Length: 277
Length: 305
Image 1 (cartoon, rainbow over the protein chains, first blue to last red):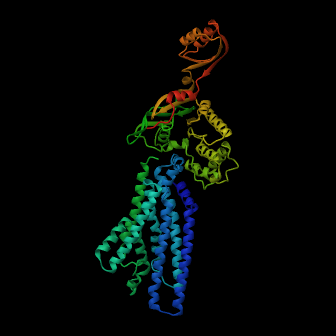
Image 2 (cartoon, rainbow over the protein chains, first blue to last red):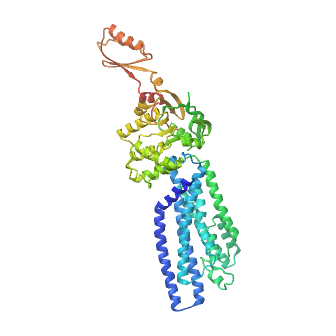
Image 3 (cartoon, helix red, strand yellow):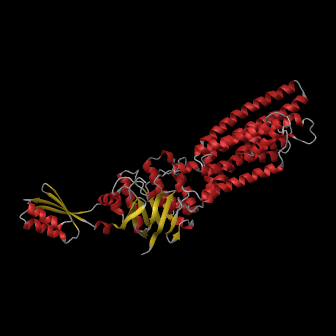
């Protein structure tokens, strides 16, 4: 399995999708850093502590939200053909005919890609946190837990996309996974609106979409971990808007996300063990 | 006889469509075995079942006395797929090291085997190039090198020379013959019948998913003997006499093609010409070529299932 982990990790580093993601990340972080810099400069020139304590957290949420987009983009694109494209091109024929269990092939792919995506996410999160902390002086609570959850986001997408890569052709898998991701994003926003206007139907719709694809609820949990010290009177204002988190997802949602990863990885192994190549 | 491959009613169905039906095959150890059939006849299906890419619908098989699906025995089996695609962002050296690791080779043994197979397939000196810069022939050589890494007891080759030039084909033939000399078994799936004829000890023909003929090349080729004669003063009586001796007789001006069943019939043909007053200028015994046998046995053309 170690051989498969190694080749998958190296493949991740060699793919064009990484280069595209790095360029996108550099552009995004450059623009983001510039925006935060000028916002902080503006507050330094004309101090308004009340407004700053609302705007800075919003800037952080904004950074993590769109950072999550880029990380998710990388997770889906680097996994969408992890197995299906090797079947389609025939590369797999020379690999799984070796003394390698099929289970090890799938788990090697999962661990190699998971390691690569988790590292990428961790670096991304750290850069955003550093920009915010250095430019605004905002103290981030629970940042290690938040970093762990930020790195878990692409792993959730990896698990289901890897399963899709066993059962669907590459293009069909890409379409299905982007639709699922879009469902999670829209469901998350609908849920926030539900909490804002106190509408139980919208809240339930958001919870259901979180069960289908728990990526967005992980993001909401991250925002709560970073921005919700119990004694913060401005918490409601900080968490308003599409990037905030009006109601904190419970710790069971994190457990659910972990089980989701285990379930879909196990399903990928089960399906691949029975698949004719 | 010790067998490298034994299959017992091995069958693969795709819904109602038959890939292979009740294949019973025996491949002795230390031989080069040719597996022949038209496109779509089920050759690749059988090979894919044997190397573990497809799961049989029914039946069973033993490879080197171990059942299908035994992961351990795969360390003694090499496979060159027809569609030899590899991670083309790796160099030749890196590709071989990766495949050597999959075979469980490590350390000095891995280094030694990678060097040996590079030399054997003629890629020594090109191992630092990326695979995507290789020509099709070089890629096929790299694929063969991957298959040879574990010094396999059993080698499955699916069209191993399809991308090679005549020199490359001769090189591969020599490699296969030397592997046979060292006791290895080679299962060769090829359309290049002239090559199969040159190196194979035994062949099997498959049509519509079923084995229709198998045996040693010598036995199969002795089924019919074709004799070509160039004759002067040919008369109708002579042709009638020759027709009664031969299973079939074809006359084209002064050239006759007679197909006889036994070797003893050959001098009788000559006798019939001479006693009939004819002049026998030339007489050649022609072995039935594998190509003729292939067309006769499989009916030629592609199978449409």
